[in-house]
Amino acid sequence: MTDSVLGIDIAKKKFDVALLQDGNYKMATFTNDRRGFTKLVRWLKNGHVGQLHACLEATGSYGEALALFLHETGFCVSNVNPSRIKAYAESQLRRNKTDREDAKVIAHFCLTQQPSHWTPPPPAQRELRSMSRHLNALKKMRTQELNRLKSGANSTIVHSALEEHIAFLDAQIQQLADQIQEHISNRDMLKKERKLIQSIPGFGRLSAAKLLAEVPDLTAFASAAQLAAYAGLTPRQKESGSSIHKRARLSKTGNTHIRAILYFPAMVAIRHNPIVRALAERLEARGKSPMTIIGAAMRKLLFLAFGVVKTDKPFDPNHHVNILRTT
Image (tube, rainbow, N blue to C red):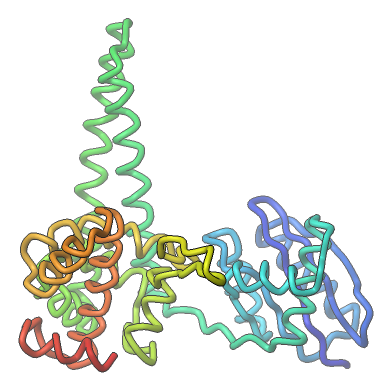
């Protein structure tokens, strides 16, 4: 038995792995399903792998089932921001980009950087996140069908079919939205945190629920700034010497779902939240673009959500403006 690291390059239908032991790589490819997961574990056991640190990129839902399977099997797992892997590959002057080469890079990154171990969220939170993301998918589908209807279907049969499908989607959306709220109401901690977040002007009942779906434990982060970095809501500066001074932009190297959740609450908060409105007015006076202002409002809302949950107190503009200065 030897200590090993496993780099995993994940795709929708399959994944490539690079097992790094004693400086040597062993490569394999498996289907991205339960059968493939079982074959991977058998392959590892046949290779006399003992302790294993597996590493894969946190690229949405494709790798979640595999990460959970490996964790439940008893292996250490790390889910790493893809931007870290990309930067590491560039630092190693890697020129080839194939699935197998990417798996090797991830394995070498795991060996040298020792990323933190991933702990899967509890089943109740995984269920909440699945429902929330499916709700978003249903709403996107409804928008697509509405656009088809507005474009003018020449066939009366198609027109009628579109209307029926939209009505069906409306019912599905409402049912799932109700189930999400019921899921939270049946769990005391989630219920309390939803109420705290909803006390912030800008957040509604559903947007508060969606935020909890993506970040089940806000206080697990050491600071609000760390939470903002996780969401990809940190400003990115580009300056070099005296000639390059590009406008700061959001890094967007984080959880895209959180940014999507915060967009419309930020629009509301700019008008109705005293802390966010004051921020927007300052940025507007400095000539910042509307999108920059919205991005800053999204970040501020996330800071406020962290603050109310951390302090276990509803939103108070006089209290939480001081909290923001220390987080």
